[in-house]
Image 1 (cartoon, one colour):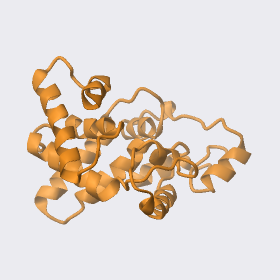
Image 2 (image 1 turned 120 degrees about the vertical axis):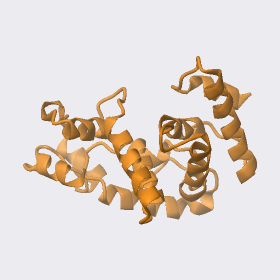
Image 3 (image 1 turned 30 degrees about the horizontal axis):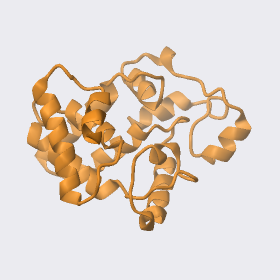
Length: 209
């Protein structure tokens, strides 16, 4: 019942009965495979993989990419107290992995030069990692992933909007971080870019695309 409700909360094409069927099926498969009860939030992760379905990703790819992502990167613990926002919004189930989650979160902060880190940026990094092997097939899949995350349109102005608009040459749509510097310094530990602190922000953004 919880899965059914979450499926209809997810921003997918609900008019397509086949999409609804497979979305529900894949969430049930994952719970059965990993032998845990369904946790709300997995639907949001699975939705990203459905958007990738196309020439290079069929429905089988969708499921096994999702399963591989959950197995390798959802660190199964519940603790929101000190985790970055991108990790605290992903549902995880076992506290013994808390240190692993924290270490990975700090690593991503260091590797993410944007002033607003969204959980989808975390997912993008992991997806790219999953397709990093040097084979022609994985190289093509990695390009598909990169193009997807550069082009997808999100509801709010966040790190993806920045990257998307930079790729399209729409520099005027870059957002400004208007929070106080004291908050920026304490929360981001100088690992992100603030317009006021970094003058060549545009070159830095372009260098990581």
